[in-house]
Length: 212
Image (tube, rainbow, N blue to C red; front, side, top):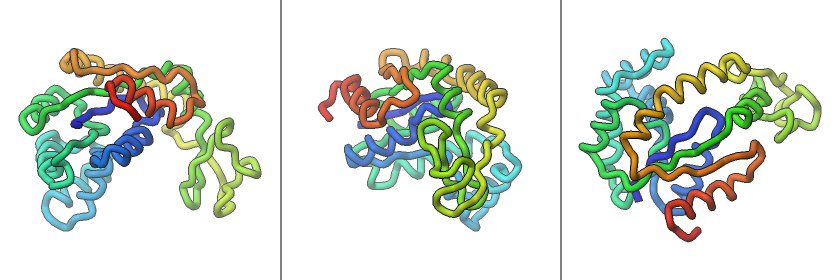
């Protein structure tokens, strides 16, 4: 099973992709994780990727495509994979079509107010980077990390203004890509902020016509 999973920031797509990958025995390939791993290498490509990431720039398509091609040629992708964070451009869709056939595209449909509630309520520990939520995953003591006692704070990326912009950019990127994959897209509704991950995974399997 060769899958792509699309979902806005805060949709939980990484969590769902990891669970599905584990259950199906296929790799969960996050391009973000892939690039961060490559950036640790001391070769020419690794140094170039590290430089782009350090500056907060997008890594050029030709590099991302080349790295993904290498990854999909590894033996554990023989029976399938689930892509998370790729493709994001027309060029990437075209390149992927030349590398592998995609069986289905999972499109997580999450209302804007749910995303805002999830992300704006998130708090991060300054010391150990543990994640909490003011409603769904509260620390024992307000503002204090259970693990290390560090201060909990709201990242800039989790403020309403930044979330609005992230969602706008995501919609601009993904809408045209969904049209390209028309016929392969499987919409999965995630209508509540506190919906259990196992429920969403079950819905994905059902939409794919598979038994969980």
